[in-house]
Every structure is written in structure tokens, then in C-alpha cells.
Amino acid sequence: MLNPLPHNPSQHALEQARPPGDADIWWRVAVIGCGYVGLTSAVCLAALGHAVIAVDTNTEVITGLRSGLSPIPDEPGLSSLLAVALARGTVDFTTTALPAVEHAAVVLVCVPTPALADGAADLSAVFAVVEQIGPHLAAGAVLVLKSTVPVGTCRAIERRLGRPDVAVVSNPEFLREGYAVNDCMNPSRIVIGAHDAVAAKTLASLFDWSHGPVVHTTPETAELAKLAANAMLAVRLSYVNTLAALGERLGADVPAVLRVLGLDPRIGPDYLRPGPGWGGPCLPKDATALLHQATSAGVDFGVLAATVVANDALPQWICQRVREAAGGSLTGVRVALLGLTFKSGSSDTRCSPALRVAAELVAAGAVVTGYDPTVHPGRGVFLAGVAVCDSVLAAVTGACVVVLTTDWPQCVEPGWAQIAAAMTTRAAVIDTCHVLDPARLAEYGLTVMFDSNHADTEGNSQS
Image (cartoon, rainbow, N blue to C red; front, top):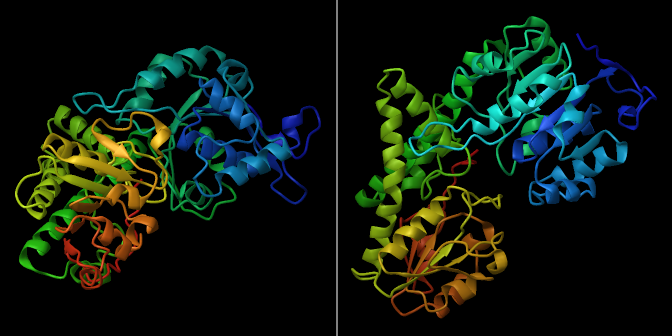
């Protein structure tokens, strides 16, 4: 079994890890994958003093990281922690996995597991990594799966690995984009799924600094817990979005309804803010992955299936509301979308509900423009039929309908008097986020649909 390194050894630059007074032991850690999860995990562990080597196949990303340039510059705190780790010499970046893993006590696998056409998780990247590094892992190493995977994946990796001297452990991540560093440094829970007690203890020692509760369980339980958490959030969000649509039709004050719900201690206020649907890199694929696995196991997961159906239907519902606001037809009608990322505080447009709304509008014949503070016109072909503008004013000029699709501050408070003046005479605003004050916008001649009296429910930060 690999032993933890003594405090402040001198044989290697990476071993000048922690300043005096920090923990007495630390580990050599290899991180495979420098996306949100991998990079955040690498720089946080390195800033805490562990000797980390992070691996990614993207040469441009690795070159930038070695120079202190984060590929996720808008993630709060990530660039500064990267600078700390580089200055201390506790992190290095490479495109070659083998030297990184040969002497590592802990190897974190943080590669993508996107959804296949049938909803199942694509594990090809995970298995490719295991096959590449498996023969080169040190005896006693702990191979940690942080990628979100179906239940049974750790067992499958053990079989493929064929290394009884290497423990395979599930340690799912619970990071939210825009809060990733905070969630890594202040975890709400640490789940360690392992059959090997020594390996579980080794992994737990990485989190000695944390006050978050540590849950020791089996790999299967840990794998299911991750999928279950994201699927539960998806259920909650679809419920809220459907409730908001109903309330709007019935003339109810939706934010007040949600505030009442949030005050119930059995429910709480989190994830009670409506929107154009849930999206991003995690919830859609994890919900469909769990649904696929339930179907494969012969379990009718009707609640989750209905959740996915409700979310898929929301863009059509919003498109219909835009059509009503435009007078019945969208052919040639100019529609402006404010917000293109899947949530505010992130530049990520993967599975963004705003883009699904845009696709519906384009299909209906609308002329669609869009603005987002993190999506620039020079980004390339963003979405067929959508013209990305460099300002809110440019996006709304000549528009008949404005749709608030992401509640960026720049989109919620863009200067509505100027916006109204730039729109056509038949001007309407579709507030899918329920954050605008219709009485205030009416002063500028704007009709607000999805009425709201200032949403005061707390965060709806999707993973």
C-alpha cells in the first residue's frame, strides 16, 4: 500500500506542498480530465497542499493552465486558486497520463459521460481511461470515479481492470457551475462508495479539512445517490415550472405561491424559481440515465418519466405564448431572447433551455436575435437562425417580443425605457423567470406575460 508522504519533503518540487502548520500528511494525486469537475478538484486539492498532476488531451488547455490561464475564467475563485497552486508548486498539467498515474496514491477519473441517443450514459471515455492507465497504476493505489455513471460501473471497472491490488471507489461530485470552488471547499456531503476499508480511509483523508458529513457506503449506493440527487432536482424544477404555467393561466401570483411553498420546512425555498426549463450539462443526462437504468431493471419510474416529458414540452409552451403575444403568427416576427446560457453565473450553453426555445421560434418562422453577457457574436456558429448581438439594445431593436430566458442582472435590468423605445409598437415581454414587475414595465408601454410581483424565492442554481 502506498503511504502518505511526510510533511514538507525535499526530493521533488511538487513535494514542497503545505506551509508550516497545515496537515502533517498529504498525497500524490492524479486527476484525469480538466473539465469543471476535474479542474476544480485538481486546483482545490493542490491549493490545500496535495501534490497534484492533472491530465487532459487538449494541448491548448494544458498549455494555458501551465501559464495560469483557466479554461473556465468566469468560475468564481478558480483562477485565483490555480495561481495559488502554481505558485506553491503543488500542481502540474500534462497531456500524458502514464507518468502522472505511476506514482499516484489516488487517481481521480473526471471524464465526460454524455447521454446516448437512448438516454443511457456513454461510458466509452471512462473505460478508455481505465484501459490506458490500468496496467500502470501503483500497487495499493485508489482509483476514484468522480464522473457521474450508472449503478454498477465501479464493479464493471474492477472486472476490466483485473487488479485486485487497486481499489475502485465511487466518490460522486456535487458541484454547481458558478459555485464549484465553494462546493468543493465546503461540501454539503462527501460520499465514499468503497468495499475496501483502507481505500475508503485514504480517500477520506483528502477531505480532513472539511466539516462536511462523510457518508461511507457501497459503490452501488454512491452511484445511485448521485443520479437520485439530480433527478430529484429535475422533478422539483419541472413541478415548479408546470405550477407557474398553471398559476399564470389562472391569474394567481406565482411568486407568492412559491414563497408560501418555500416557507414550509418540509419543502424549503431552494429550486423553487421558475424558468424556461432545466438544462445544463448534468440534470438532463442524469435524469435520462436514471430513467434508462430503471427501465432496464424493469422498474416503472413514472414520476421521472413525466418530469422529462414536462421539461421537453416547456419550450413549445413558451413558443405558443410568444405566438399569442405577436398576434397569432410568428412568420417574419422579430423575437429577442435575453440570456442564452442554461443559468446565470455560467457561460455554459450545453442543453440550455434558452436554445431549445430559440429552436422552436426559428422553426415557427420567427427572426430570432439573442444577447447574453458571456456569449459573444464572434463565438462562431452558435445556433442556426439565431443572430447573437453584443448588447441588449442591439438584440431588441425592432423586436415585437422579448423573452427573458436567463435571469442575468444585465437582462433583468437592461434599462426598460430604452428597450421599449427600440421595440415595435406592439411590444410584449415574456418573463419565463418570473422576476419582472409588470406594473413598472407597463409605464414604458410594455405588456408582461408570465406576470410577477418581484420573485423573492431563493436560489434555483442548477448543477
